[in-house]
Structure formats: C-alpha cells, structure tokens
Length: 356
View 1: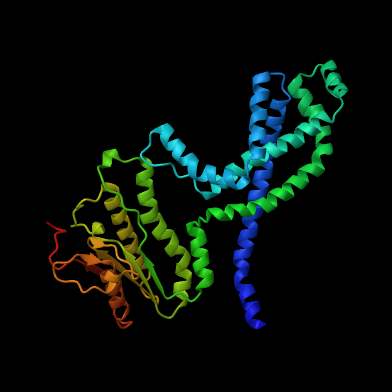
View 2 (view 1 turned 180 degrees about the vertical axis):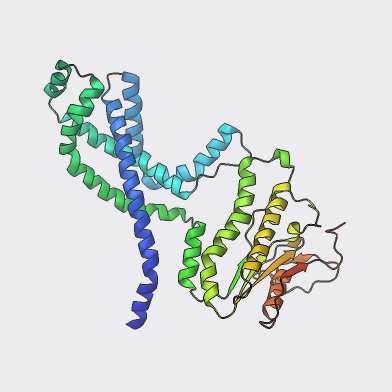
C-alpha cells in the first residue's frame, strides 16, 4: 500500500500539470471558439449570399470531419503549405501548443456557430424591428438587443459544448511533443537524485551564411545556447543537493578559438562559442560547490549507437572518432577522484585534419 501511495504521490506533478494545460486549452478554445462562432453565425444569417455560402460551407466541412484529422492536418500539413507559399527553405515552426490552440478554436467555432445561430433565431423578429425603429443599425441591434437575449437561451447548450471540448482536449496528447520545460520537469520528478548532467543537444547546419534563413539561424542558437542554459538552470538545484555531481557539456571543437569551420557554418560556430562561454562562466560560479563542470571538445565523429554491432569495433589509428570515444572520455573524467577537476577535454583523432 505504501508503495502505491508513493507512486501516486510521484505522479501528482504530472497529473496537475496535465490538468492545468487541459483547463487552459479548454478556456482559450471556448472563448476563441465562441467569438469565431458568433462571427460565423452572423455571416450565415447575413443577407450577403456569397458570405453566407462561404460560412455555411466552412461550418458543414468542420462538422463533418473528425477533430483528430483536423489536428493532424494543421500540425503536419500547414507548415508545408506555408513553406510552399512563402518559398522558404524550411517549413516554419508552428509548435504543438499553437497547433492545438488554433485547431480547437477553428474546429469548435463551427459548433458554437450553430448554437449561436439557433439562439439568434429563437429571438422574435419583432425585437430586431423594434431596434431599427429606435434608430439602431444592424450591428448595434445585434450587440445591444438580440445577442444579450439569445445568450440566455443558448447558455445551457454552450456549457454542454464546453464540457465536450474539455473531453476532446485529450486528443492533443497524440502530437506527443514535449517541450524543454516539460522534459526538465519529467527528469526532475523521475530522477530527483541527479548526479550527472551531459548537455549534448545542438542542431547542426552547414552551408553559406548568406543562404541561410532567419529560422535556421534561430534554430541553431536556440538548441545550442538557449537549450543548454535553460535545461542546466532547471536541473542545477538537484545537482547542488548531491554530495558529488558533474556537468559535462559537449561543445565540440567548433567552440575553440583556434579551430576552423571545416564544413560547418557561421551560425553553428558562433553558437558553439557562446555555449563555450556559458560553460566557462558556469565553471567559475560553481567553484566551491559539489558540482564539477567540464567542457568536452570532440572533433568530427561518426554517429554510432550502442545497439549497433560496430559500437564495440576496435578502431585503428587511421579510423575516425565515434560516439563511443566521446562516452569513454567522459567516463574517464568521471572516474577521477573528487579532488581532481578536468575543466577542458579536447578529443581529437590521432592523425587529425581538423587544424589543417
């Protein structure tokens, strides 16, 4: 029983975070969907035939398509369509949250539209005629006379649709996109006794600087600099609580002042230099604590996985570096006594061409 209680207690942060996001998305989608639904309803009731046809077609389309399909359409297809329209090199990053907000507002707006339209039509036409008689125009009559009365009639159905919306929010979990804050929170919850942090995330980009888009440059900087600093800051309190802890940041040789680009790019090298500056400043701030900070500078490496057969392949002097070489080098630093701090670790191939 105590073990079950412990499991429930450990899961509470995840449950509360999920509940908070569900409520937040429900409220935003309900408000946005109601506003969009009112506009659609007014368009459907408009005397302008093309406008009424377009609104009716939109509502009927949304009400006949599954919500899950709309979510996938917006998340996967809209970025590709925007790339095609703008002629960008890469699809714009919309993100799971924006996709969820926009999708639910557009989808639920079609259902709220029919509720609002029915509520407006439930008001006797004499109310609108009376509003015209006292000098109000159409917009004023709707805002001051018709809609306030219609709201009272459609309120129960609006609440029912909001409850349905609350239940449908669970579909966004299928996007399965975890942001940095969520990842850090999960790590902190699942592994509260954290001893080692290895920062190795960075988006590589090559090519001419003048040919790169702003989105490419921002992606490199965000993944290399912002991501490293934000993740480290969120996990640093856990590391400081431990009697012995280590932070290893894989900067790569592109962050060294004497290294050449060697097929890399200006944004990548600049981001690596900024990442290197962060690690050096963090090293100074962690002086006197239980946390050792090490900068790791590997050269060009071949990507290998521990699940692959060549992971244990014995490499000769002519072979390139691999991920295993980096892992073993970090393990070597971790094996040193606590009175030894290896601040910088440059990993080069025995017959390097990096500086040539």
